[in-house]
Structures are given as C-alpha cells and as structure tokens.
Image 1 (cartoon, one colour):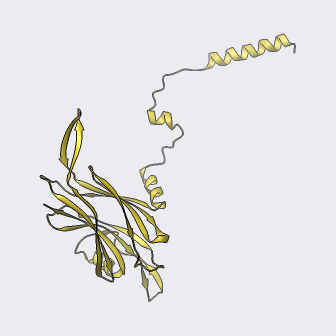
Image 2: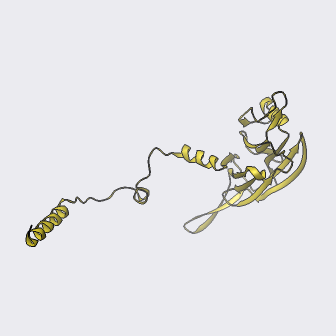
Image 3: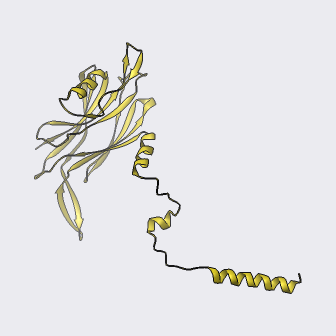
Length: 219
C-alpha cells in the first residue's frame, strides 16, 4: 500500500471512531463515579465480618431518655475466680452534648454510648474507643491474670437503660476455661447477657477471669 493510501485509511479510521463515540450525561452518584468497580454483593454484613476478622468490634448501647443534666461514669471491674479484684474509671463525662444549627450552638442529652474494641490476643489486651455524641476517649484493658492458654471473648448486655445511682452493665471481656473432664479449653453458653439471668450467671461463674464494663449515672 502506498504511503498516500495508508494515510487516508488512518484518517478514515480516526474520523469513524470519533463519530461513533456516544456521549451522555453521567447521572451516577458521586460514590459510583469515584468507585466504579465496587460490587453490589459486598454489603454491611460483609464489612462487619471483615472487622471481626481483624479483631475489631463495634457495640452501641441505648441508654433511654434524659430530661436533665447528669454525670456519667464508665467503669471497668475486673473479676478473678468470682471476686472483684480491681476497678477503673474509663470515662467521666456529662450526659449533654452541643450541636449547631445556622452557627447557633444548641444543647441536648445523649441517648447512646458506643464502644469500639480492637483485640491483641497474644498480649491479652484490648484497645477501646468510647464515644458519646459529645466526647470520645481511648483506653486499654489488659488481662494480666488470664492464663496464657485461655482465649478472651466479648459478650454484650441487652438491657442497658439508665437508672440513677445504679451500675448498668454493658460488656464483659472474659476468658475461656479448662474443661477438666475432656481436657479442652471452652467458652460456651449464652451469646447476649442479662442481669440476674441463669445462663448469664453460669457463664460468669465458669470464666475464671473477666472484666465487666458498666456505666453509672449520678447527679
């Protein structure tokens, strides 16, 4: 093919490709534009499973409604063989928070506490982030009294509405135990906890070492 015919063919293909391109307003969401290859089959449950795989859990606790200002303490009580051996104040804050409308500061009362945990099994500890609408802090729990062979697990309490001057439990961080009959380490029983509940008490009586995280509302 002569150079003249080759140049003509290239010019023709360029013009044909340009004319065949279809233009249309992109009505996708901003997220779809920024992440065009995200698959719809990855949902919230998958993300939660991924966090758990990394040793991260997120727990939210409903407190009920407040109608005045109170002080809230979040406490960590450690138990060894059924007896409380230490207590620590993880957070001391009020039940109020500030938000803004048209640059005007407004105040209201919190109605939930969020506790995020990241476990470090080899070190027998967990890093916590404790959040309300108005405040957050990071603390750590170290289980120095847990036997090396035992594994630590989180369990959540269900009934967490506040009562004045009463400890309301939120979570336990509890160790497995040795089943001497079969010579295996176990951590079994109830998945969600309740106060004065038979299954909950059985779990707490079986675990040799645990930390109970509670909150306490006072004036």
